[in-house]
Picture 1 (spheres, rainbow, N blue to C red):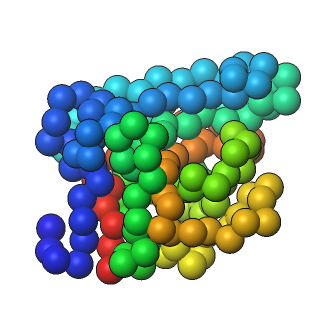
Picture 2: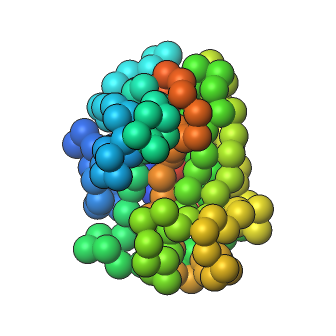
Length: 173
């Protein structure tokens, strides 16, 4: 990496443990009664180590998402990312649309987030997500990058088969 980035995840630690010392977690709509199912594993995808999420997103029972999430600091603390322009990730997918969701310490409800969508192409590519382009979801609180807590990679909103690999996550300037 050059000095214009700062590593969040580079897959240099034990499986599912990030470079910032927190663990990747799978979250599905089952927490709200939905029936979507998924898995998160450490894998090698197209020759590259990755965190891989697979699953089936179902709209049954008011469901509709499968997510892998990562706390950005240990013990549920927040991090000041205001020196950075955004977050970038290396992704390899199945040609479907996914979302990146950010959460701050000011959001109290699980359905609140700041969102930005992208297409995960079937080849490795780096995608940049400027903080200024994230859209608040079910909150009127502006995104405060001085208090970031969590990032999620989410298959959401329609029935489909999710298959996305993340090979790195960084802040970028």
